[in-house]
Length: 328
Image (cartoon, rainbow, N blue to C red; front, side, top):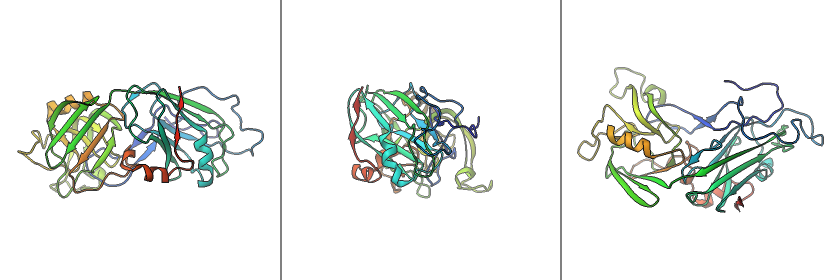
């Protein structure tokens, strides 16, 4: 599936796909991508640029997350990715035309990661059960670089149960809670001293029953003779960062916990039964918070680690500042 070329529509995919290496370890931030062969919502009154604006190529929205109609976790941001750069002087107007409404009003703000990605998050986690709408009304809006939007789109989604996982690297445990009540404490192993796990809070990006993981894909080793080389397809994978962090089962560490204390290449290992159970508990946007690792917090744009920025840091990346959502 590829992007249409030469058209005059804003491209807005129903759900963003963050593309990155499928393996534990690695550094780097994330890259969001998608295609514009599908769009959600209804077109605006006109599919042509406003006659009051100069003619030119359209401003494209490459992706918008969460996917419309989905149920996500309390740490899930709204993430909009543009195909072309948005100039700094145009961002306040672009933010103004990306209106967030909620059934339980919350204070939040947009934050720009570079010139192509803008995320909106509440100051604190979303209240469970909140209905949310994002209306990207870009008709006639300039990106400051000669492009103008020609359409508007709407996404609606729901905040589900408040499911959280708190990982203690030094304690080799993961505590899972649902709506404030402890559900289960699992035994884990995290990264080794050479390949430590990211600290901080990472909202689940997605999950897959099986993922092909290779050491070469994240720059650990492409040498088959290296003790750090691996090329495996592993089950029950919960994706945390674009640099390759997962919670999953590993054949090389089948019984994780303080007794084995075998370090990973940056992932969080669970036993087979625990990995399958955890996989079934979590959804996109559920926060997984890791503490006790010697590594820094994951960069906020390395997946959806938005809550790794304090509120003041978050506002520093906003063009229009904080605001309260409109009421649905």
